[in-house]
Image (cartoon, rainbow, N blue to C red; front, side, top):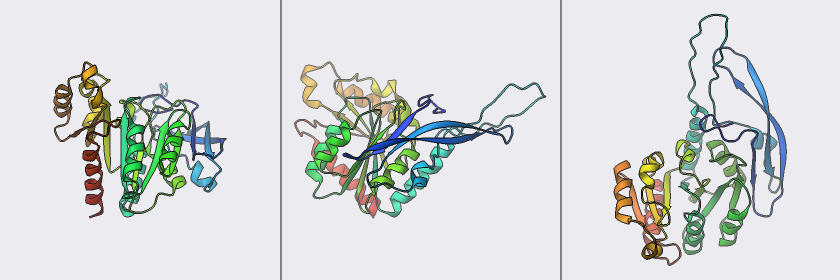
Length: 295
């Protein structure tokens, strides 16, 4: 179970490519207690693709994002418990991911948003229009189905789907395994489309180079102040579906004011994936940031 939000109890995580089959495997792991050296074990199911299968150890080195200390009420005297950072292991592995990306000149983007904001549509159009200039690799995060991975595959980019089951976010361990399965090439752009959620993904560093939060004009213009952690941790905010502004009650100046109130360093791009208006600004941003990384 996730030590921060409680998701993922008895969870099944599957990593697979479009057209590949997946199997579930029992896997036992242990949690150390902070007040003694005892451990207890739990059985978890982990699925993976057998198409282009990696080693058994790669897919079952279960490094969890929820390294946390347990406290128990005991009657054998006073105790001082030192709690571990519940995100400690996630952050350590995120730094390993980041080091790998930097060594390979991989520009890694973590796309975050609430469901339906247009993350996958943005990716599809970007791949189709920039695919000749940039080598895209994509990790799709979703609780169920291969729908998004199939869409990205048809758009022309190598992709793996991470199904998190009851989990509400990706973590650095899932990304680490997905990158191995995807075999991301040097001098490329890796796009990680996170699970649709503006809460928990804000807490989990994946090792990305930049975090991009996407909102649409069909949502409330108070999103930045309702979910400040996500906007505070992002580098770019994309306001999508601007073609619908005449038909919705959405104050675009207010949402920008709120976003900059939370994070005054945040860059903002307004665009419509459907009409293509503003997409050139997004493409310029991706090119500029990837060049900065490789310089």
